[in-house]
Image (cartoon, rainbow, N blue to C red; front, side):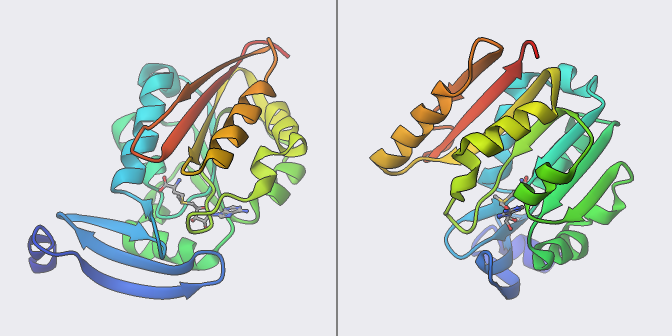
Length: 221
Ligand SMILES: C[S@@+](CC[C@H](N)C(=O)[O-])C[C@H]1O[C@@H](n2cnc3c(N)ncnc32)[C@H](O)[C@@H]1O
């Protein structure tokens, strides 16, 4: 395809839409790859996909393949979901929760997420969803950004407790954060301190310049 070829020399944006959550959504051919960006950052595919793939590698592809259920909070174009299905060959149930219906439309039209049979997409605020769901999960991926901003609820005790309750024993949380300021660095250290001996937590700083990943394993109830 001509646009794909040309994009090795210059990025080509093929779709733009304003969004109240992300300010702006753009679908762009970049270096031969179709990516989804918000106004100031990459949302899906490109560097974001590499970051979460690393997180999944830390947990272990083999281990993940044996899981039964995965919850993805923050779907965007669904690049981590593609890594799960195409690379890891995960066959269990995937539930994706995304607040922005414009994003879901893009995910279906440009990234073919509706062709994944074991994926259920839910348009909802992740905070509301975790209050409502009655199911538990083996892997919970938290990847919630509003452009470059991470909502505060992600770091608050109430949400952390609720996520911990939804996680099966021997299950993992993969949490993607952005750290640019000293304040955000402190915020992440405080987050780390909230997990007691029932959890095994690892921090992976500077995964790709500004991203810090957490993997958290639940050892016991
Ligand atoms: C970095 S993108 C997610 C990328 C995705 N995990 C992937 O692998 O391609 C962040 C997403 O979080 C969504 N989001 C922001 N606030 C949210 C909320 N409160 N609940 C659910 N999704 C939210 C944004 O609309 C955006 O699509």
